[in-house]
Structure formats: structure tokens, C-alpha cells
Image (cartoon, rainbow, N blue to C red):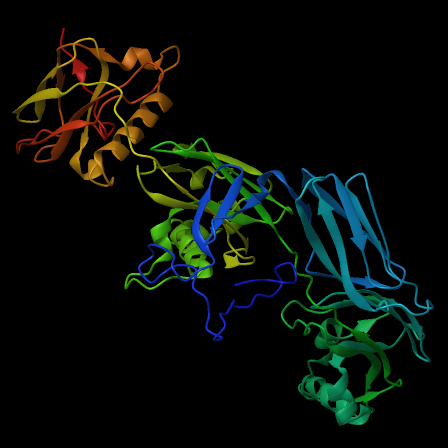
Length: 562
């Protein structure tokens, strides 16, 4: 597919017969019916080799970008208003600004300033696009866009015969106004009413409809109470109730009129004219969030990554297998479906804390992130809320992964999913060594002899419950996790060297769980924390008995026999 408008729209490339041109063959092998004979990449560029042998080089964007922070897709302005947007960029040597007629734009000190035309200006465009075209001084260029639209202000003071209404704020869901009656002694009703419906029904019908709600309380002698909660007296501030939000981008009247009881005390009658002030709710401002994601220091068991958002709103981020984008029946999943499943895992894990506790101990903002994030896998992820701490396991060697980042409002997806694909390399042993593990079971005790073939090799020997061991995909993922926690849990003053063994060793483990499977394992490791050999393991089963270990023995340690 090709885009001729900077990526806003795309269309398929067709051949002379009008048929779509494939990028790859059905089996994903040699590319016979494409423009390209090969596609390769390195850290800086992607190389497209054409069928005639020529090569197109396209630079990756990690060192060349420009984003408008906290900028929406379309920014609403009132006449003459100025808004500013912080710019973040890298590798930009020159910029060119474009704008709709009648608007003013300026870029200085990494701040883009946009000013809407005045209401009495001539020949201006009410809406359009502000664009920052940027160049690296060589061959690369790109563009950052901001939609703009101008309309009259919905706020202001309106004087009427019976009331003064000052609308102070209008949003996509509500209106806020200060209402002052000319007669401070009267009780009056204030509400926002759909303008089209009001005009269709007529003023008399609307008043009759509204006061009928209150006549019920008058008839049953409850009006003295309810007029204090449903009506206003003197200068009062009205704000649309959260329970009955207004529709976005819709026209309304803010209406006010006085009511008093009739002489018989059986119904209400208006004692002022109806004042109505037209206004229009705004359209929701959707922040055009961008995420710059990078992956580095990729090893066979881990990687580092960074996520730089263009705003301070909350988002989720993490590493998932590329297989996550394929469903159980082999069907491809959309990015949104993968993101929803990612969030669902958190909801399941912390369901009680999110919903069942009174009051709840965790909010969705405790589980999501904001601002720039730099993470390393594997790691112990300590969040601000200690109840939501979690351990991130090592990656699996020779596996395709995706770094993902996506904005959320609570748990609901708010943005597209930013992705960065990468593959972990294979584990390559740097030492030649095998381990002979001789394990003897006596009730709930183990006697272990470790005989390495390389007597000079430094290594680690531990044991764990089989149930925990088999939660991992393979031996090497478990070895990487074991080494991480070994280093993480080092006591003060001790180093990894203090945990390493050399030569033939005899060890024991006592007071384990009865009738329980355990795994004893060993792997080569340097003092710098580099795993040098594959993991060797032996599975054993403790004998039945009444002995029970202390509660702290969830992951027992081996004790060296001297």
C-alpha cells in the first residue's frame, strides 16, 4: 500500500491489470511478484532491494522525529485565542510552518504558538491544519500536524428582564453559570434544555412539563423541603449534574424562571418570564498521544526499553510475545484486542483490590504509568502502590517479542498501540562443563553430591519445588530467573561471588514438605553474573510423613556439608 498524503490515507498498489501487488508470496518465501527482491535492516536503516538490483535506503526514525506534546487531533479555539504546545524533537535542523488563512503560528525555543483569527477579521478559514514540516539537513523530512477550528466563545454575561446569567464554562458534558435574579426574594428553577426540543414544544409546554414535577410535592405537602433542594434563591451557581451529562457538540438553552405556590397551595405558578441563553457544548478534545518506543541491550534472556509519551496521561506498557497477536484458532488479532487482553490480565490479578475492598486499595492509575518510563527485563517491578508489586520474568531465547505501549482512560483503550518488534538471540555456552547430581532422599531430607566435569568452573546449585520450576518455559528461562533473584536477595555485605561454588561439593536440605516434588539444579555462572553453561536438573520426591517445615521454607536453600 502507498500513501500520498503523509500517512493519513492509504491505497493499494495495483499492476497493469488492476490487481493488487503482493508484498510477499503466500508461503512467505521468495518475492516473485513484488517491487522488492529483499528487505533487510540494521540499527540505522531499512534497505529495500528492488527487482532490478537497485537499493532504496530508508532511515529509521529513532534519531529523527518531532512531536507536539499534549496536542489533540483537532484543537478548538475561540476568536483571538492563543494556545502553545511544547515540541520534543531529535535530529531536526530546519522547520517550515504552514497554517490556514488568517491564523498566526510561530515556533521558538521548542514551543509552537498558534493564534486564531479575530472575530472581525476578513478572509480567514474557520478550520484547517497547522503543520510543522521538518528536515534533518540532509535527505530526511517529515511532518507533524495539528487540526484547528475556531468558533465564538460560549461564555459571557446576558442581561434579562428578571435575571442576569453569566455562563463561566462550557465543556463537552456540562455548563456552569452564575444566575442572579432581579428580585432576591423569589425561588427560581435553572436547567439546560435541548434547544431543538425546546423550539419544537414551545415555551409554555416546557414550563408546564417542568413544573409538573414539582406540583406532585406541593400536593402532598412536601414542597417546603423540596424547594430548597430543587430550586435556587438569590445569586446561585448552576452546574450540570454529573448524573445527567449533556451531549457533546449539541445546542442548548440555559433557562431560568421563577415559581411560587398558588393561593390555594395546590400547585405552582410562574412568577417571571422564562429567560433562555443559547450555548453549544464543545466537542471532546482527544489528545493525539504519540509514544516513542525503543528497545536496547537485547540478550538471550532480557532487554531494556524506553517509552517516551507526548503527554502526561496514563498508559500501559510491556513486552509480549509476537504470538500474542494470533488467536487460539490461528486467526490474527488486532492491536486493540491484544491491548484489551493485556489489561484484562491486570484486572484478573488485582480484581479484589480494584473492586471488592471497601474502600478499594488499588485504582487503575496505580497499575498504569505516566511520563517517560525506562525498564529492564527481567526485574522486580516496584510500583508506587506496594500492593501492586510484581516480578517480571526473563524472556525466552530465540523468541519473537513486541514492546507495546497504549494509552488508557482507567482500563479503557484510549490510543492506538505503539509497537516495537525484536527477537532474542540463542543462548551460547561459554564454558564446557557437565554436572553429575547425585540426590538421596531420606524422609523430608535431601543429601546432594555435585560433581562438575570442569573443576575450575564457578557455578550455582539450588533447589525449588517442582511446581514452581515447571511454570517456566524451559531450563534456561528458569536459570535466568534464579540468577536474578539470587542477586536481588543478596544480604548486605555479600556479593554474588559468595554464592558461587567450585569443584566437588556435598550439600543437604532438611525439613522439606512431605510427599512433594523438588528439583535440584546447577548451572555455570561467573562472579559478574553471566551464565556460562546449560542448566542440569534432577527431580526428586520427598517421602510421606508427619514432619512439616516452617512456613518460611517456601523456597528452601541448600546448606553445604563441610
